[in-house]
Image 1 (cartoon, helix red, strand yellow):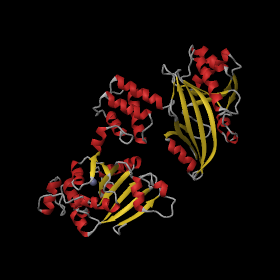
Image 2 (spheres, rainbow, N blue to C red):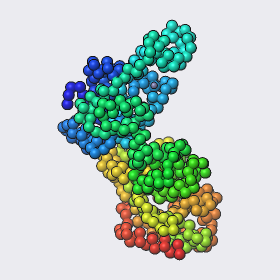
Image 3 (cartoon, rainbow, N blue to C red):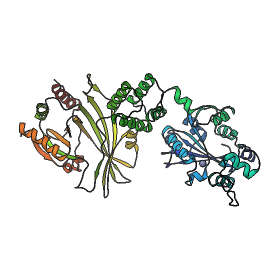
Length: 507
Ligand SMILES: [Zn+2]
């Protein structure tokens, strides 16, 4: 590598997440002058998962790392013009908002983020304050009010000549050549046609993100389509919506996509008009049902004993419970059966327990029962003054990363088969669980206290013997269970037994 480049592999960057490669390009005098640089050091951040592979190596060849990082891929590129005042909280422009948004984008999608020191279109921060005082306050530097000016008039007032943008971009081409990545294809994160033209005229293969988005739905850009649906500005045909749903159903999405998707679902469920046809709303809801098992819950405990958002009652029950609930409600109340594996880890750094749940769900809401793909949930219990219980969906690779992370100690795996009745009855949700090393089944009932009591009363009216033992939350959740090997000796047999109950229920 040339002496114009310095580099540093940063572990766990706060904004870009995980490991990143920070590069500084030292521009020469000509580049600095021509390109309107106010600082001859240009910072480049490279986010690539490939960095994880080289992190523990003693010797690293930067060229190889760069080559590997974006092999066979179109590379997201953000060229961020410096706005020092924005970074220090000035809200007169949206530069900072954009900077953070695109950092987040690169965090989720990988790519290159360049901090271009071209403050005030290349005229610098010293000039910028004079310009802003004229624009925002209408005052010149002597403090006299001369009327608010736009950018061009302010420039004229200060320099007595016509405004010209003094920024050029050929230094970007030089940086890419220096790094050996000038032959890659880039997707430029910008709204500015001019910026794109500047790059392509230098021979850099680039397209604008918006055109990239319009063309096809991918895991990287699905969220952009969804955002347009959410704000009602979309113009997609039914096929496009189906394409998006297929992608989500196949779990080829990132965090951003799923978050936006969930917001849309919320709007649909609240009957907000976001301009979707009834058919498409149905399709989105169906997709949601296929990927989410149950409702995400957040439990807030003020202290160990008091106030939960929902009451929970747990007890042991025998197999008759299935027949009895069917008798009481006149139908099978269980719409889903989930096969779960819960992996318990200890976070050695924060001393939290972390539970990762992987589940496969059989759904009977559909006419044809179907097995859904696995889902992984992260659940973290933080015991300080408050106990928090958070469930977030995580990816399979993230589950794997817990096993590989030395900060996490793998404790045990708990298998569980659960019959789920959710939002079917008025005010109570019932889970019938089968755990290895527990006799019979365990029933968890959630809801308002009086609703739970009424439900239990109905059951005991039919059979007192069905309710075998009430179990406190502590009994179920304390450390004792961790000492057992809580896996079914024959998982398939256990599943078959439960599925046959399930089939009987639906007769
Ligand atoms: Zn700004």
